[in-house]
Length: 134
Image (cartoon, rainbow, N blue to C red; front, side, top):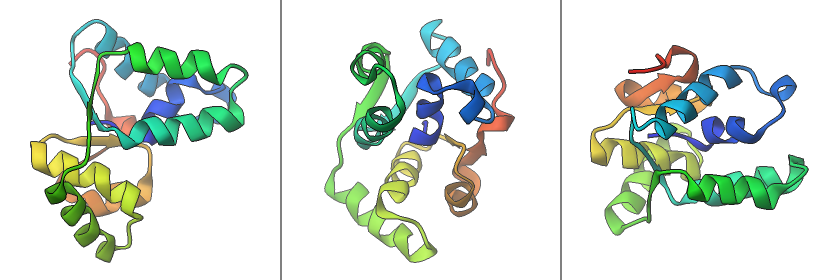
């Protein structure tokens, strides 16, 4: 499970993104079929927002993401309810959606968002701890 904070690093200027190398390791592992990546479909909107503001060619970047073998998950009532519950821990609803999906799938959430990771508990894995090739 990946948060938008990681996916954005795939298409960003290296000078602007700490741990971009780790994010690119994930992209490499994904393209080599070493891992399966799941995201709420919300990631498309978050990525699109950043690309529209920062990318020289946001359409090509967005198409590249959509062509990647990422499993996108639409919201359902259970995920929306759990996301709302997680907001009581100080999360924004959209950040809570990633944790709710990670919990429901029993998959770890790799993120570069410290606030989100603190509230993800055992489901959160900081991007800098990602191990390439596993």
